[in-house]
Length: 151
Ligand code: 4NP
Image (cartoon, rainbow, N blue to C red; front, side, top):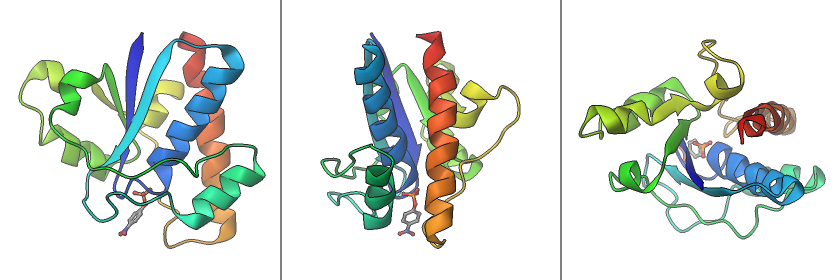
């Protein structure tokens, strides 16, 4: 069983969205996956996802309300097979905590799994509009559908 961890900064917008979408697709396609998410910051530990992220995902048929934010920990390098980060800044943050090459090799930009070598980022909608939350949902959903084809 593959264990996948999604990582962003706050763990209240992008990575819980990816976690919820993957859980939704896991159920739909009966996939053998373990999925979690975390933030590189300690800003929102214990909080539910951002209410705008929850509302937009709900509108699109994905429940995120039960998720709670936690901070990325170096133990996560051993606990997970893949660590998928939402942007380059969080890629740098996570890599800086890696103790060895094996840990570093587990880390990649999430969108590179669907669109190899493009180095695209999932934009942070936190300071954005309702449309930004919808655009991020569609981007993460489409990439997730491509990503799960490998399982
Ligand atoms: P996320 O978005 O990294 O996608 O969860 C953010 C959430 C909160 C903050 C920044 C980004 N913040 O600065 O509180």
